[in-house]
Length: 335
Image (cartoon, rainbow, N blue to C red; front, side, top):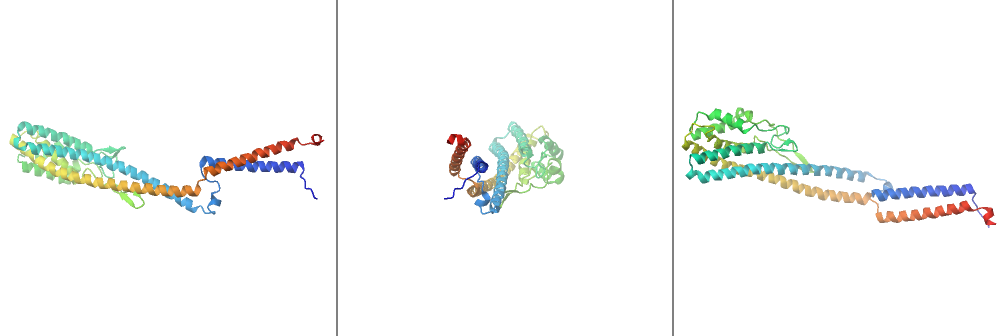
């Protein structure tokens, strides 16, 4: 019978090599346990990592869509809140004016004119509204406050109608000032005449915010409040009580028209909000599906990894025991 033996150096090198291999395996398994990612991806995927790379790019792109959708949702919700305040004021004042028309007197007309001026200031403040330092209604020039103050508007209008007394003449002159590029657009509007670019919120979805403070529907609201404010003795003191009351009544009719148009704006914004929410839901579902697929490809099994760690630790302990015993063997102990 042939007996094969190893010298001390050969045995030492064997045990050392085996120890290094087991320690490397333990380090790899420990990394898998801490990161959750399998260490043998090329082997696991047959050497083709292209699909994983495509999935990771798609997930990254979907994440950016979700961020854009979230920002768009906040943008539209904030714009909706500003328009809602304007609409509420138009409805409230218009209803009050029409309800008091039959019993209007000088005192009532002046009170309603004062309310009109207050709501005009609030409307301009709402149209100058911002989100995170960006103006919502100034088109592409989001760093600019779109409208000048209510006092600036009233001063310009008084200069136009200061000598008039007929309600129709006053109303027509005010309307012409709002329509004239040298009127409202030149004196009051500071924003851009270009709408903000569409925002991509999904693979095939974009939303576009085209509302600007120079929108004709906003002008209608501003004009209606301004008409009521002009009835105040602070602006057209030469008007009689009958003329002031008639001007306030005209403002009430205009406000109801404005209220209808503002409702249309709210409806448009509501449609945009609904599209954003639907797209976010689809994005979330797609993101979950892609993440699940990616996890199935690259994630290790924690239970299997833990079992393998126990096995390697056992082998290391056994190897250390053998190494210790081998180092204690000598001829004297044997004899």
